[in-house]
Length: 177
Image (cartoon, rainbow, N blue to C red; front, side):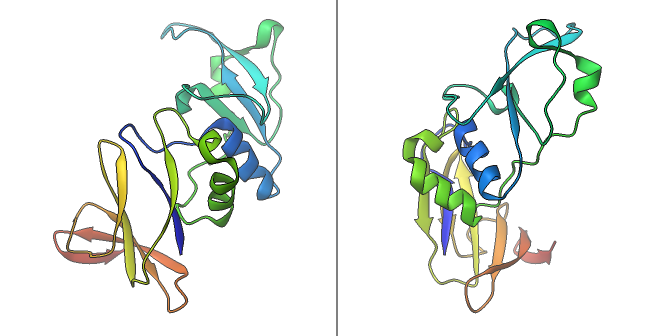
């Protein structure tokens, strides 16, 4: 079974190019926007710019990128009222680490799949009943012993090594989600 992890200090994250490609692989229509104005807690509008998969988002934080299933109605210079924007539903881009489209896109794009402060890597998980992603300062590795780290999110797999459910490890006990 393959899993995507971050292989450097910083943190797991995908580039806008990778996110758009993954959503397209899933057959989802996506309209992606980049936050274009400077941060100001008192602003009344956001300045957004429509982007496509060719946009190079390296160095941008995930909170500077937005993904919607419908186009936004932007005003002059790409402005949209902050209240209007808050009421729009963004596409969920929190992909499971063993998502086949995620794995395929990371393998295809290589370094171009990396988000800000990320160096993504596809790793093979040993044939284990459980596996989890453990991290220290953003640098991740796979663990397959539930007693190794109590704070990890675990994935239980069936006999064919397909993920069947998330399991939480707390203080040496296993609780099913």
